[in-house]
Image (tube, rainbow, N blue to C red; front, top):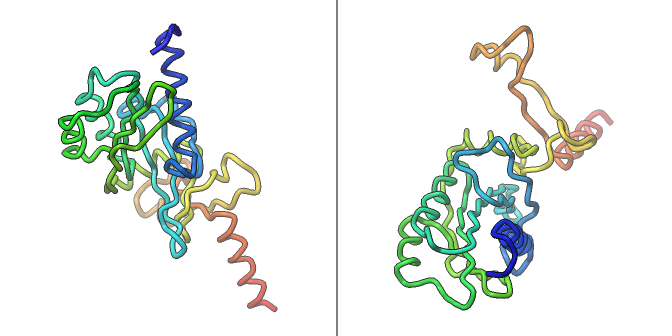
Length: 214
């Protein structure tokens, strides 16, 4: 790739892929939260948050990307990416190919595993060769990762937003004590079953309450 060290090449490659994920000409992700150090299996190189609900819903997708400086372990990397489907709604592999292109066999393998392909050329520009199909992640794993990313899911509109635990004036948290007690999850009178409301929904609820009281 260059005279830089493999680590430097990998960092530059992840930076290019991250920029493409955020770009309107790429996947137009809303944010790229840092991948938690404690996340080990599976561990994507980049995670993007994408709004998928359109005008009528606030649904958000987690997009997981494995980034590689070469396609030398192509099938294994596809497997690593597909493992991320336990929590991600779409999964991609981004490979540095220089002037080369993906072969028909590589595209066939990616299609079989439902993994999207991103080609990175010699000037580190990214092109999506194969769009990733929508997957059905395990909701428990998805919500756990969202929490580990310092984010929360609004109980009303379903958008993913910065957790009120991490940022002031960023919505509101409430604690479901009756629910926790029902499932035996009360510990030393502490409740860990928490839910979140985003700033928009919280403001709308306050507006409705004010109008009714008035």
